[in-house]
Every structure is written in structure tokens, then in C-alpha cells.
Length: 272
Ligand SMILES: C[S@@+](CC[C@H](N)C(=O)[O-])C[C@H]1O[C@@H](n2cnc3c(N)ncnc32)[C@H](O)[C@@H]1O
Image 1 (tube, rainbow, N blue to C red):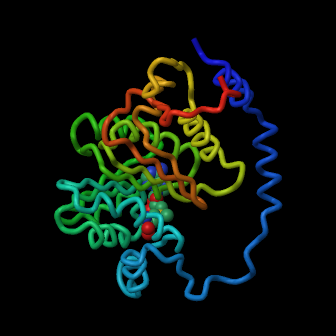
Image 2 (tube, rainbow, N blue to C red):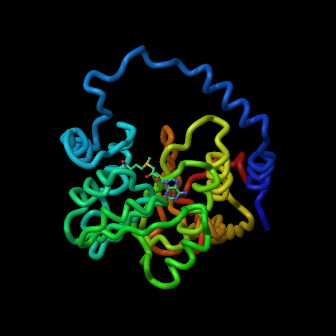
């Protein structure tokens, strides 16, 4: 039996509508813009090791990243740096410099995979750094690579490939299930407010708020409300939105339920 207040909550939460999305966009337009000009040194801070590597790359294989990405990388990748047998996959090799950056950041014990559609990128193959040539929008390419072990399950995926919504979607759909527990998926360069891949991610992230079933046990305050998780809640820890970037973190272990215990002995009588 679902208690009265929870039924009210349901009614409030479920008629999610396009109007609310539009209202959010209107509110966004009202947010004050930053004063003109870049930050003093152009840095967002936080991603210093990576940013320092990037800034020091004045000669040699090129790297092309938005500057604010370094902070995002460090925030989500740093906890994984000490993992044994770390596997990193970057889609989009271009001139090879970002593969060097990941090597420096994750160390010699990490195995790095680069994927690109351009066969010339094979030249960036090194010991511990493998190059796969293929089209990220081709599901068969991913399925074959995963099935025959050419590509082991990655801890980290960075999609910096062709940047079309279709490519981004296929790559996410094909690779997310294979990301190791506690791993991180990053998709870069999601440009434009009405971006189709951005909408796809919003649809996915909406499932984190899912309440398809809910059990209530008034006699047990430790399990006052219990929601058996849906597939997304069970496997995905969080979805993070940044300018032009989405980061998806997977859980260390599947989560079977979300629980709202009640603590304390005095309760206001108006919510029954
Ligand atoms: C933005 S560049 C990568 C930049 C690089 N990661 C860096 O940080 O310097 C994009 C790369 O994606 C590759 N690419 C474009 N479409 C692709 C596709 N469908 N599948 C795989 N790679 C693709 C391009 O050949 C190009 O090398």
C-alpha cells in the first residue's frame, strides 16, 4: 500500500512535460552572463597535470581539446589512476597527441586503445598503446572487437571521434554495457542546445529518477520506502553534464534497491 504523501509525490513528479523543459530554457536565458574575456590564465583549474602536459606540447604530435575538459577529466579519472590493469579507450586519434597525454597521466601499466576511421592512425601504435581502425557508427565493428577480444572491457571510454549524434549514440549504446564496474564514459563535443545526442542522454538520465515500483513498510522505519531499481539505477551511479561533455559513471556493483529509512522518534502529525 503506497502512503498518501507518496501518492501526492507521484502525482507531482510524473506529469513531466515539455513545458517544464521550455521553462528551464527560459530560466537559463535569464541567468546572468559572465563578464567578457577569458579567465586570467585561461585555466579552469583542477586538471593541472593534464593541462600542464597539454601546454607543454609545443612540439610533436598535436592534441586538440577544449581547455575546460582537463578539469573534468581529472575529477572523474583521478580515482581510477591506481587501478590494476587499467584499460583506456579513446575514439578519435587525429594526430596522436592525446594518446601521449593519457600515457603520461595513467602511467606505463595502463593499456591504451585508440580507435579512428583513418588508417594512417596505425602509425601511433606503440607497446601498450593499440590502434584499431574502424567506424564508430558501425555496430558490427564494436561487436566484433568485443567478441573476439581485440578490445577488452574498458575502465574508461573517451569519445572524441566524429562528434555526430548518430556516432555518439551508437558508440554509447554499444560500449556502455561493457564498461567495467566503477568505470567512466565520457562523450565530448556535444554542441548546441537542441543537440540530438544531448536529448538522448537526457532520456537516459531521466531513468535515474524512475519509481516504477515502490514498497512501503510503515512498521519498519529502516525500510519505510523501498524502490526496486530499474536497469539504469542498478548499473549507473551518475550522469554528469558539463559544457559540451557528458560523463557517465558506472556503479562498482549492481544496486538492487533504493531505500528511504526514517530516523528519529518525533514526527509532525500533518504528514501521515
Ligand atoms: C577531434 S579529432 C580527435 C582529437 C584527438 N583525440 C585529440 O585530442 O587531439 C577526431 C578524430 O576522429 C576521427 N573520426 C571521425 N569520424 C570517425 C568515425 N566515424 N569513427 C572513428 N573515428 C572517426 C577523425 O579521423 C579524427 O582523427
